[in-house]
Amino acid sequence: MATLSNAEIARTLKEIRTLMEFAGEPFFKFMAYERAAETLENAAPASQLIASGELQGLPGIGKTIAGRIAELLESGTIAYRDELAAKYPTTLIDVLGVQGIGMKTAQSLFKEQGIASLADLERAVDAGALDGVARLGKKSIENIKRGILAFKGRGTRTPLGRALPLALEIVAYLEAGGKARELTVAGSVRRAEVTVGDIDIICTSTEPGDVIARFVKWDRAEAVLAEGVTKASIWLAGGLQIDLRVLPADVFGNLLQHFTGSREHNIQLREFAVRKGLRVSENGILDVATGTNTTCRTETDVYAALGLPFIPPEMRLGVGELEAAIAGTLPVPVSLADLKGDFHMHCTWSDGTDSLEAMIAAAAARGYAYHSISDHSWGRGKSMGLDPAELRSQAARAREIGERHGIVTLCSSEVDIRTDGTLDFDDATLRELDIVVASVHNAMNISRDAMTARLIRACENPYVTIIGHPTGRNVQSFPGYEFDYDAVFAAAARTGTALEIDGQPGRLDLPSALARRAREFGVTFALDSDAHSAAHLANVAYSVGQARRAWITPAEVLNARSLEGVRAFVAAKRSAIAR
DNA sequence: GCCGTTTTCGGCCCGACTGTTTTCAGTCG
Image (cartoon, rainbow, N blue to C red; front, side, top):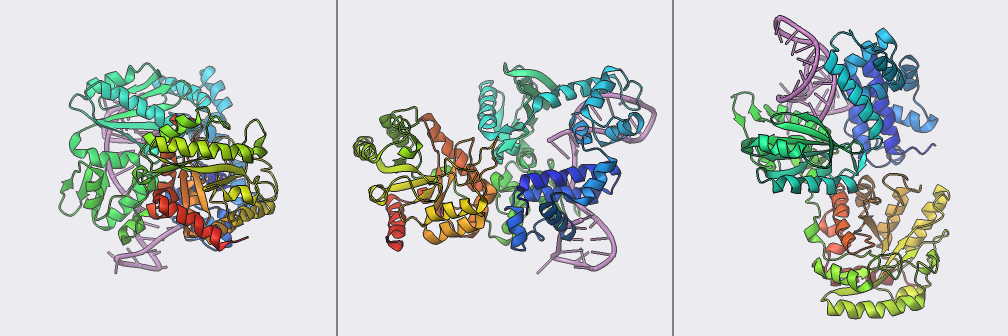
């Protein structure tokens, strides 16, 4: 069976969706593919779900689409997709990706001028062939020209690690203007999506014009895309778009909820409301029978008006959170304030850029009760990793420095998991450590079976506390090495080994959909920064964001426990697996 | 194509803005 990631499958489903619409299929028929794709993006791996018979029955995935996904995994393609693609080239999807060109325009350009790709479109625009096309005036053609430039410059989606700091920067900039109230990041950034298409900022103001004027003058804005009375959009270098909306205070809750999404969550929420005779929009909640419109100043009020508890933004993915909220079983996810420590950080003894003392001082300054320094083991190369003697010497110094800074500094190491699943240090050395983070750093392209066995063997080592960045993925460039997720999650739960959610913005590993799957096995998680400098200790917030997307509660987080609780977790595993 | 504390058939979230138009289609979120 071909191993396609959910993201790849979702891409194919969306391709089908677009081509179906292009072909003139009924609205709700092609929309079903879009909803199924969105569900899949936040679900456990499809191959695993098929094996366990759980795929059909996921929100928006019925018999037909489940069958098509299975067909794709088995044969590498979907006959229905190929049929569509034979009539309508998939390059039309690029044309539709140009801002300003929607389905109707693309259809008429294809039918009348044979425009089937971005290159076709560019040629037609340059040749003036679009002049005179119905409903395409001068301004529309200008928009299309800009849209083509943006499409080419846009490239990939922006990682959260770049988008969130930018969002906070513009919020601070607008704040300094003094005219904006309730400035909030909304949209996919607020939901902590790993990558985002744009940045949404909303606020209220009694002088919206002043806020908009300040926004479009931001010195980092490359171009102003739109500037209206309550809404403006700018582009940054590289094509990232930032939208600002200035809203009346009395509907702030409705609007924040609306603009936070996800779209799938909002659709489900509105369908739920319709069944209660209520119509939800960004303008309020309309009681259809009485005609009364209820406006809300806060999101909590919005959900309460529908008889629901507040649903945290990171959980609004349309993957069962509404059903759980209705049933009263929605867990309260872990938050940054729950964390009492951080197990994964490096200093200049290995590949960190700040000194041992600087890292300890910074951890203490964050208010942690404990933390561990986990520099690399020597297998990573003598220049980078520590040998057992260096590790002992570091441990002694770290404990002493920690005491001076009023924090318990645990002795740890990020130990390489070798190809066969054994570790880079022998048992005698590992036994001296308080915490052991075991990670895969090399030989990532071994077979799926070999990688599964390698990770399970690491879990079965009594001294391994945490598996670091369990999939090895890179948010932008590498989907992660292949292994049987369920088998490893089961092993982690069985052996009392925590799985890390690594907070480095380039990693965010475990991915949240997998973490949610792991949760079903009863796994304990470690939310770590994997900081390589003192400033990067703050990256643990990214880890928390992903954990919240996975519905992880404080009780399931090792570093939300007291120091005694952590020591008990370590001791329990060591005594259960004696050797 | 999916789905069900009114339904296995008949529904399916909601609105704003823009540009091209004399009342609205198309696009976007």
